[in-house]
Image (tube, rainbow, N blue to C red; front, top):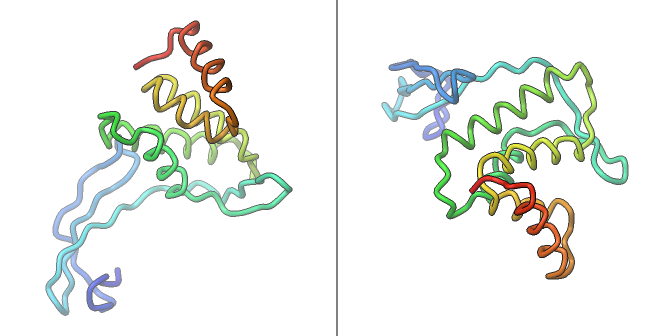
Amino acid sequence: MRCPFCAHDDSQVKDSRPAEDSTAIRRRRQCESCGARFTTFERVQLRDVTVVKSGDRREPFDRRKLEQSITLAVRKRGIEQERIDQLVSGIQRQVETSGESEVPSARIGEMVMEGLRQIDSVAYIRFASVYRDFGEARDFEEFASNVRDFGGAG
C-alpha cells in the first residue's frame, strides 16, 4: 500500500479490525520509509456495476458519491457515522447482488429514500427535495404532509 505522505510503496499493517457492520476491514498501517501512520479500509466488491443516469449517461457505481449525498442529507441531525456506513453498505450490497451489471440511478435514489425514511424524517425530506427536484414551497408541504401521514421516523 502506497504511503499517502511520502509515496513509498511499502507499508506494514499494525492493526486490523472489522468495520462498518463487518462489511469492511479497517487497517492501521505504518510506512516503512517515513514512519507515518495511516488508515485504510478494505471492502468486498462483488461486481462492477454501472449506474445509468438521466439522458442515458453511464458511470461506474461510486460508493463515495453515495456516502456524500447521504451525509449531506443527515447533516446536523445527530445521526451516528456508523448508521450512515450501515446504510451505504446495505445499498451497495443490494446494488452488487441485484444480478444486474447496470442499475438505474432512480433505483439507487429510491433505496436511499427508503433508508433515510427509516432513520430520520428531516433527512428523508432533505434528500427527497433534491432527488425529486422540489421547485416550490408547496412541494415541501405536500411531501412533508405525506411523511406525517405515513408516520416517518425522526
